[in-house]
Length: 161
Image 1 (cartoon, rainbow, N blue to C red):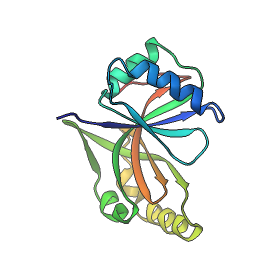
Image 2: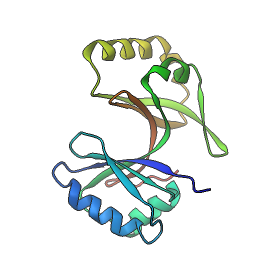
Image 3: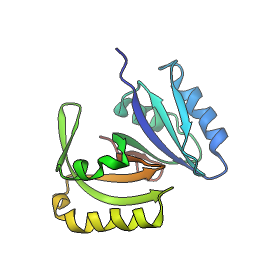
């Protein structure tokens, strides 16, 4: 059975269509079922593919695509209602490895002001769970969905998992 990996691509605003076409050209030979979904925000979209993070990083290094700012690999995607349960755990499983997480970025998109305050206060109370830095994780919320991701590619400084 095919495992689908989710990636969050951040690209230069206004260049989404061109960049998306180039990404399809790059990934299609390796995965004919690659697909995308708009996030509803300028310069941001999701790519769903069977290509593993290391292979995607290698492809992006070997065949650079203009206008890509960074690429994050989604470790966890859940409904926002699962936030309390997710953050009570200190570790997320990633394939066979465990990643000790440190939240380095919290972004709220499409979330009401009251909900932002509630989530932010939750982090203030429980941030002690995330003090051991081994790998930086990003927590992002798009339209009532929670995404925990790690950066795998940066156009300025390439990183690899």
